[in-house]
Image (cartoon, rainbow, N blue to C red; front, side, top):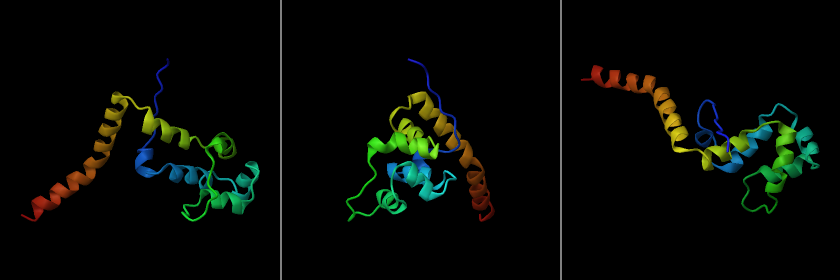
Length: 120
């Protein structure tokens, strides 16, 4: 088994708490015209929109077996990286991510400490 390491900025789970959030982002942010992505999936734009919507009353949903087609259409692998981050990270990768998150918070933390000190 080969080691698989992801190196990206920020946590996809923080950016996209829900699976469908990252799926929607991959479609809307891929740089292609929405109707062209829909056509690549052999759907109308309205059908793809309904499948991606978070409408509880609509029975039309994005079907998981179409994920491969979606990845090909959008050329965006974030849905795969999201799944890996959620289910496959080892303890070392989680620790590395936590340290990176902490380093990113340091400027804000320093600013808060300065504000507290100046108000005393």
